[in-house]
Length: 402
Image (cartoon, rainbow, N blue to C red):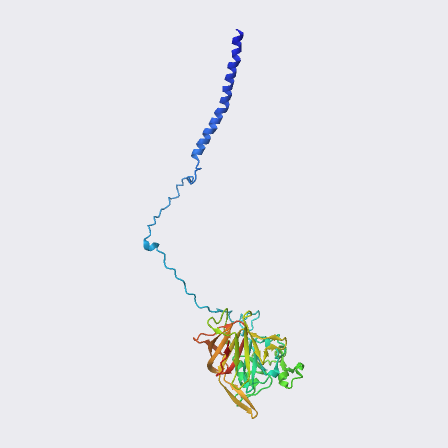
């Protein structure tokens, strides 16, 4: 064999080797590509294409409900009606026993079945400042004679009551007014008119003459009249009350007050300042000024703020009631003309709260029944939660509102 023939063999072997290596790589790659194409085609990658659920022979095919096309009348929108809001009425407060029946304020200890305590207190300029009145739930002011008014301070709880006074005598009118609350009446001496209350007062009506258990306060030694110094404390009263006294309300008794939360006079007239005259022949007025931030009225009398002499705090009230009624002078002795106030029957008046007032009517069927108060349409009066000041004035007197 020639050298030229021997030189061709390596060239032929080299070409054969390249083809073999190509096949070793290309064939597996081609298989992978084919498998990928098949998987791509058979897998639901396209947007919006859901995979077919597996067949379930126990699941019935869904029922298709065809909805008919709506008519033009059905597609038309109904007219928009704006509902008329009902008149705003106060939310009734808690049920009996859960609150102080004289104020509507909630308390921890239920004293609603206990009789309240009513103190007869002088109200002349010489008697100022009065003591203990700041803790009273109700202040009731009425005409006592031709020159002055008197106060009845009513407390549902006297367990922490400091000195209270100056205490004054019992009068027929004051006794009748306190009986509207079935209160235990506390006074210093007393008299009645025209033999209207025969027999012993304490025996018949359960009053307490504090002249036997009270004392004369030494802070008033400069006052000329002894009656301005007569005081009593809650502790002395609780220790001195006779065991025979009825201290609980009789079954079924309920006070006349109903309380509500919110605006209790939604349609009232403005009453930011109220001036009350008690009688044409008495130079005595009581003024009430509304504090909108506290939602109370502050009282002024005898040219100065009405304060409690125990702490010098001003007296404030959520409600003011003015009762118009008839009065007549009586002469227990030739030198003095006292006034008898009619507390029974019915009449008119005014209710003031929250910077507004409305006219009301009142009714009392007997000397031992509660006062009942009504709005002009005959619905029972709903009062604001808090203390109340009641002014009993002559039926010809009209408060001044501004």
